[in-house]
Amino acid sequence: MDISKWNSIMKSFQNLMGWDKGTSEMIVTKRLSFGNKGIEDISGREEKILVHILRKRYRDIKEMSKDKK
Image (cartoon, rainbow, N blue to C red):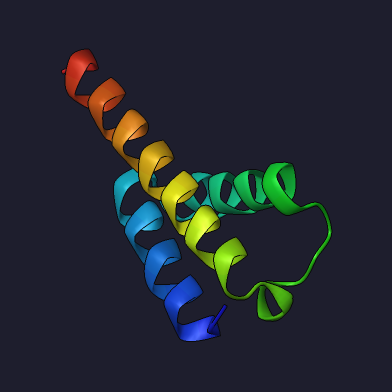
């Protein structure tokens, strides 16, 4: 996965949840999906899967924050 793409997704999470929680959410989600594999080592199909998982998680968090308001 390209680091700039990872940083772009992380920025979205940080804008939604704050810097600390957004960063933690990204790292935990990646580790649950791919273990200790480095971001730069994820490519092809794995990248598509990770992006899909992160989008789904982002939507879930956004909906939960809407419900609280």
